[in-house]
Image 1 (spheres, helix red, strand yellow):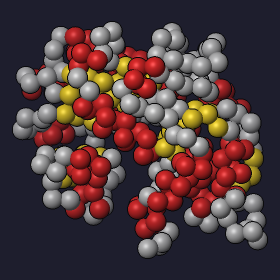
Image 2 (image 1 turned 120 degrees about the vertical axis):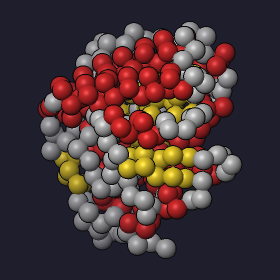
Image 3 (image 1 turned 90 degrees about the vertical axis):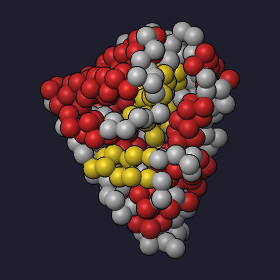
Image 4 (image 1 turned 180 degrees about the vertical axis):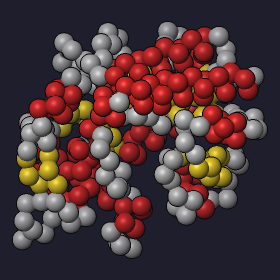
Amino acid sequence: MVQELARAYPEAQIIASDLRAEASDAAFRLDNVTFVAGDILDPQLFESLFRHPIDAVFHLAAALTLVAENSFERGMDINIHALIRLLEACRLQGNSPKLIFASSVSTFGGELPETVDDYVRQTPQTSYGAHKVIGEQLINDYSRRGYLDGRSLRLPIVLTHPGPPTASVSDRIASLIREPLSGQHTVCTIHPDTALAVASVDTVVRSMLKLLTVPAHAFPETRALNLPALTVTPQQITDAVVHRLAPDTSMPIEWDKDPVLQNVVDSWPSHFSSKKALELGLEPDSTVDAIIDAFLDDYSFRQKINIP
């Protein structure tokens, strides 16, 4: 994300902050990128990040589904309390900075239509989903008051970062691509025929950069919209991955269903669309093969497995 933003805006000074990111990463060696290590729960972090006027903020930090389910307090601290501190930092800037907020497919749940669009009622079935709904509404209100110019993009399962693996539900799906292609074994804990709404990292980044350029009047009712998604199954992902492995490779994926994770995934929309997003030029990935090809082309993954 940082690399693409730096290249799209070479004249801008970009501040990148993360808990675990390393300053040696290629993105942070770019001339117009400054790296600030910090914990979003540390109030002093916002003081350092907003020391100078900020024109735009991309807020991607979150306590994901399993973390928020296992620790109510930590989920609230990261997803709600820290978000409010960020919104207040934007408000106190006085220049109504743009804010791109990573929301989630998990804001929807319960009984859903076959295709979930922007106007389906949000009934989240997890704390994480509830936190994202609250975040969307806060951003709507701060935008209405002119304190900031927000845009919330609801993301499906994102495939896939180069690792190391995380404990998130979505990364359990991502591991079906990452681990076999790096010569490692993985276990899929959901049913192979589960329909999943997914998007590639490249599509997410392009869409967020696109939203940065959209004028505020394009969002008359709400600042939140879905990112149109491709629907696939773990079996389809597995078939596409195995097709890329050497013929004599033993099956690197086994199946061991986890009822808790299955219930979480089953509560998410399996078909995810948005007329508004399509009008703005945000499009889904075309095929699972295209998602895998994009992942194999990713520089950080190639470096991880020593491909020049």
